[in-house]
Structures are given as structure tokens and as C-alpha cells.
Image 1 (cartoon, rainbow, N blue to C red):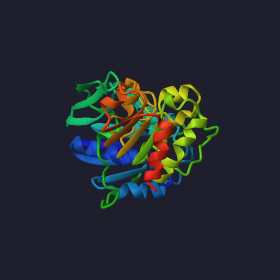
Image 2: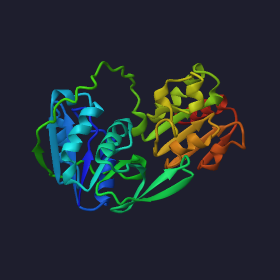
Image 3: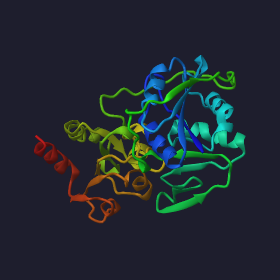
Image 4: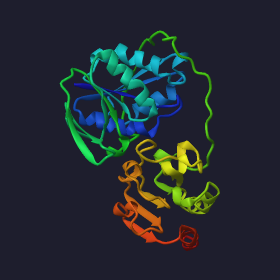
Amino acid sequence: MVALVIAEHDNASLKGSTLHTVTAAAQCGGDVHVLVAGSNAGAAAAAAAQIAGVSKVIVADAAYFADGLAENIAEQVLALAGSYSHILAPATAYGKNILPRVAAKLDVAQISEITKVESPDTFERPIYAGNAIATVQSGDSVKVITVRSTGFDAAAASGGSAATETVAAVADHGKSAFVGREVAKSDRPELTAAKIIVSGGRGMGSGEAFKVLEPLADKLNAAMGASRAAVDAGFVPNDWQVGQTGKIVAPNLYIAVGISGAIQHLAGMKDSKTIVAINKDPEAPIFSVADYGIVGDLFEIVPQLVAELG
């Protein structure tokens, strides 16, 4: 058995989600290969070759791979698929855009957002917003899998010495084109990669009130997040959303401020190592998953925490 991991990257470096996906691939048994499809992506390929447990890095280089268009990347994966028993990608927007196309073309059932590998053909994945775990067994000759990164430790980014092979790039699919990208600039850590996250909910009351959380986030060098209720109310941007329909996170420390703890939000953060909840309602569901809970007015408690942190 040989597993192929579709690397998520920006041509210059790998995304952290790739390291978690390599761990899942290694647990499937057999060798692990990594596909780096990009444009002038030598630096990303070199980084992939250093990942512990990777035996080969496959490089497909073409100008039309530069922006990771799913149609083109999927065609490149399909060109290689015959050599692999497992094809995996991170369960990010990138991976979720590519692998369904691959699974459809291979006429196999995709196995989505796995959190555990029980055997080469059997996997666990959360269902019902994480309230139940389904054990899924696949009889397909090729297992097409997206990996929830919070379910697997990251593979070591160094220590490996994989061989690198360059393959011919498939032709440009031609049915989509990159138009533009608006990237939010922030000095804070990326939400899905942050070790500490400070999140606000509907209890903040307004977008202006989120400024109360900024000193706390600054002290902790934390990313800032939000519940769907806060995003839907227009308090903060969509890319702050944590939850079932937002970003799935598992930082070392998650501070939930003014978040009641709807099931959809819990699904996105309950795997955090330590959860601290601040809410004026002692019956708020968030306290059921919190390691530490503070009942009170967030506008008094948060400044006190900042003062204690010096």
C-alpha cells in the first residue's frame, strides 16, 4: 500500500495542515508520498522532503497550478491515482475543493473529515456536529480521504530525507481561471494554527465591544475568533468564525468570552487542550466543556485578567 498526500501550500511554504495529513497517511500503512503541485514551488517541495515519514515527493510544476485551482489540481491527482491505495488531503477549503472531484472521477465514495485510522480500510469521523462518532469501512480500491487536522498530531517538519521526482504536468483544464484574491492582513497568528485563541460571542453586544478582547489577545499572542452568532450579527468578519460551519480549531488554550456554547460552536473547539469560559449565565452550555469557568460581566472580568497578566 502507498498513500498520496496532496500538499496544501502557497508555493513558498507548506501549510501546517499538510503535516497532520501526513500523520494520518502514515497510519494507513505503507509508504507515504506527497504531491506538490504548484508554480515555482521548489521551496515547498524541499520542505515536503524534510517531513519525517515521507518517502517520496512528487513535483508537478506549471504556471496554471500557481493559485491551486481545484480543477487543475484534481486532474493532476487523477493522472497519478492508479499507483495509490489511499489519497488524502487536509479537510480545509483547499482539500474539500479538490478531493470530491477526484472521488467522483474515480467513482468511489469519499470519506470525509476522519479523526482516527483504525485500519487501512476503517476510519472514524464525527457526525451530528461531533455528538457521535461514525466508524466507516470502505471496500473501494482507492480510499479518497479528507483529514480533520485536529484529530492527528503534526508530523515532524524536519528529519526526513525523501527522494524528489518531477512529473509532467497535466494540461490546463481551461474551465476556470484565477481572477483575484483579497487577503486580510493581521499581525496575529492564523486562527487554525494558533496555540491560543480568544473568541467572542453574541454576548459582546457589538463589533466595537470586541476591542475589549484585543488587550487580552495581545498579552497572550493569541488569534481572535468568534461564534457564528457574532459573525451573523456583523460584529466581526466571517474568517473569524469558529464552529461546525466555520473553522475547526484545537489550540492549547481557548478562551470563550460571551459565548453561550451552541452545539455548532462546540463542534469547532471542544478538542482544545484547555478551555476557559467567561459568561454571565451560569447555565450556559459552554460551561459543560470548560476546564475553567468564570461567571460574571465580561466587561469587568476581561480587563481584570489583562491587569493580572501584567
